[in-house]
Length: 150
Image 1 (cartoon, rainbow, N blue to C red):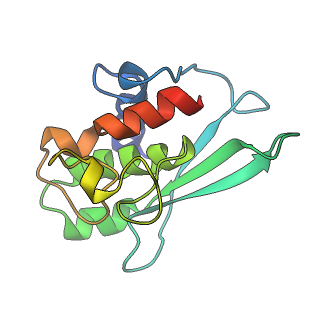
Image 2 (cartoon, rainbow, N blue to C red):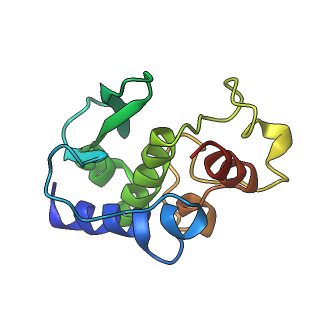
């Protein structure tokens, strides 16, 4: 992963407003191996996909144990006004999927439109490169879901 995307991945996980700061999820620097929970990749995903998330390995209770997050930095650079902010939004969004969060209105009981209390957050899909705080944070119901399930 490129330097800019790598620094934003770290920031999305463990900075003052990253996943670890908002929930009970912890982060560690392990060499990539059996203890790795998320592997980040920078790849071309075509003309319309900013990022995606896939389970790579399930544990003995069929819960995903290792994830792969891919970010389409070339598309972000070509379409975003502020590519750094959009990389950060995309990473926050995809990391949210690794802890069980969904897009708005697709069956997740925690993040449906009525539960957002009028606040957007990084689980909203699409280009959102303005750098607003909501593009790099999880909503109150997202946080409850993560803290309840993990």
